[in-house]
Image (cartoon, rainbow, N blue to C red; front, side, top):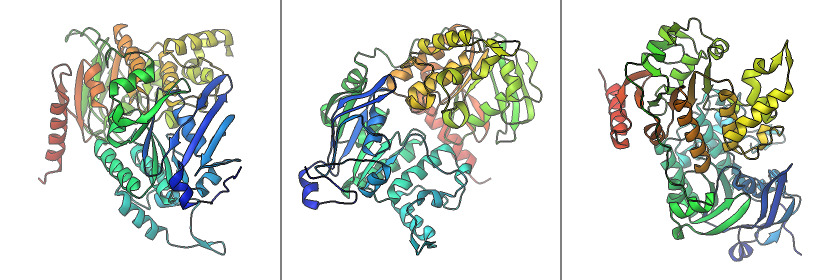
Length: 518
């Protein structure tokens, strides 16, 4: 049988065969069957969506296509010919690249250095000083507005995701696998990315679009492949599907509602668990005031860069408060540090689960019990039986799949990692829980599980502060919501009585007033 060598292409073959084809692909991680007999075809010049719950196998399939993983069995064909000894370098030589959900950037290098890392121009081993010129051409194509000389470590998460996208474009790939490319982008940035995908499609590029955002899938895709529990449910034109049919195929059941029933409202005169007054911080908070009562969910609504995360970090003690006060259960937090705040039974689930929440090389058990090890120690010696029992109970209550607590957390899907991160903090029986983007990069089934956990916290009398760029989440879960702009709180809205259009209008109106000259 004729086989493809890296770098070989044949125009006639490209026209007759799929660009990439998988046949009966199987992949196992330990005791978990990630893929079982999966076959999909990627045609030239199409946008092909992979959808499914976290753990369904869609990211694993994308990584097999791009050489990051090797299939245990089955066949991978490129331009109609079988490939063997497949790895990222060979895939790149064949014009196949990936934008991974887990960012793989070098923090200390600049934007342009990261974009062209490994594909620099050189002569006799000496690098050519043309990065600026090449970056300008690439930026003109993408229109992201990234500063080329900025250090990647200084960029916000959304901008780091744009750097990953530019890296794939810099390799002039003819197949690009985009794994959750919009999870940190605003609606405007997402629209710009979709326009870029359309341009790539017109140029004959094939884009694999892995996403939990079904609206985006229907907007940009030609073909959709639905996976569940490592198996392909079906693959076909997206025009033949609806959101309901896709969700039912993903879950294997009907989803009755988007959000669980809201917990009972708390009396306005109830004593607050958290009370923030005129707070300012070293990291951009200028004037924040809010309160959260026991059993109440309070949301922070704002545009990207409004200061919502900075408010949460200041409350938790990660950033120093320079003015105002933070009071917990009637007692002020003075010179707060995360260690002291945790001892006061405050939990903080951060936006960046990899950089700030989890130790990916360690097991689920070690990650979940990390913040509460004292609870399982006697005279400084860890009681492993109690630790294992508590962690197992917690991950099962959040439907983590599989509930294998000794596996490295890095081997789990994004949604299951998020459940582990939530378990880590709920294990400490918190009085106040601060959630920053708790469902970022999480599928619709896992989202509902997390929503139920948030509602259950409130029913148990826990105070919850919720931050989400998906404004529907705040409006669907919270009892009250504070508008945030430029590091300041700007009044409240009633989520049950305020349409999302009104929220956006108020947020943009605040932004416009701020930008008007005095």
